[in-house]
Amino acid sequence: MSGFAVIDLETTGFAYNANDRVCEIGVVLVDADGLREHSWTTLINPQRDLGAQHIHHIDATDARLAPTFAQVVGDLTELLRGRVVAAHNATFDASFLAAEYARAGAPIALTPADALCTMRMARQYLPGVGGKLAECCGYLGISLDDAHRALADAEATAELLAHYVRVSGGPAAWEGWHAHAAGLAWPAMARSGVTPVLRGVASAGADDLRRLVRGFDASDLLPEAEAYLDLLDRVLLDRRISVNERRALADQATQLGLSPAGAARLHRMYMLRVVDAAVADALLTAQESAVIIQLAGLLDLADLEVEALLAEARARVGVGVGGAGAGGSGADGGAGLVLRSGDLVVLTGMSEARKRELTAVAEARGLVVWPSVKKGVAAVIAQDPGSGSGKARKARQYGIPVVGEGVLAG
Image 1 (cartoon, rainbow, N blue to C red):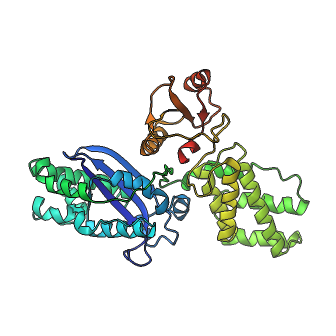
Image 2 (cartoon, helix red, strand yellow):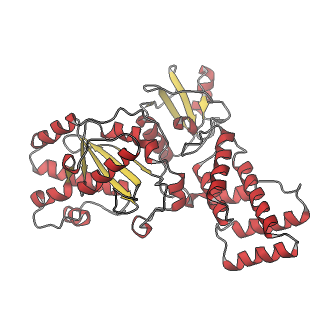
Image 3 (tube, rainbow, N blue to C red):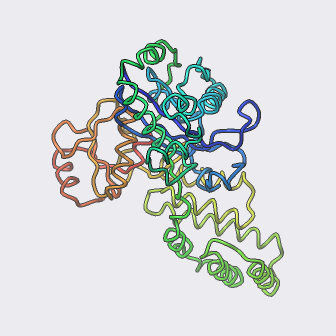
């Protein structure tokens, strides 16, 4: 018995067979005894508005930086294949999941009847308790602090399922479910290894914003242009333009003899120089991408212009335009480096939280994250490929490439 894949989806609405889309996925893998094994989550770019943001509270810029469902479908399939798919209100989640697979050109046979529903089973295992996830969790003392976040809901549902497994007498009571899951056909999808995008990417970019808007040289501009852009710098530092600030910009443009078209040209020039500053270190972080999107929106650039700016930035650091994450190959190379399933990689020069995130990404691609540098390691992945850490120095002695985090997006 391979265990369960507990899922939760946040969506733009309820019409899975019409215009609504998945905008966040959380998956928790547990074994046949209900013991937690692994988790995975990412925001999904629904390629439309986010719908009920007052419920799921997903930031539009975060979602725009996220991969599409089609970009993660291979990684998701590897997590679900052969396992019992479980959810709280499985009718909802299984229906949306099947609809998204179909849109991605990889239809699946999964129906609501094929997915284990912890809400429906509450009648059997928690008689007299309401069916809502919060009610079930409250009765059992299961923490649910971040409701309507896909991973938090999936984690709580996994604990609920573990309770069911225990009180039912153990895995033997679920053999029928496991046998059925083993017989479900899933499409043969290659894992893309796209870097997951988590909530808060955009709001975490305040320092990046201050660096980027001050990071380019305006000395070659005409005096009127330099004066206007200096005011624009100061206006944009809080990532908003108030009515009064917009009026002040218009007044200064008039005083400097700038037409609306001339001011718009300066806005585009400004954004190109923000891109210059963002890629000056040969890396493009998710926070920097968020800043580009936010500033371009404030300056009323069209969506097509925003996508062109992002494509320019990604091309200049060697990240595929379709990718969703951060980073180029870095100072020590990595361009052309292909990591294959089973390769050993070492992480260095980053926070423990970031190591956990990248470990999940690496393992989803079939890579093995090794604690120390030794012969046979395929690459050392560093936040800064110019790192002078002991691991990076030892790697260079062995001729092992030291590369940026972007290699995991390849």
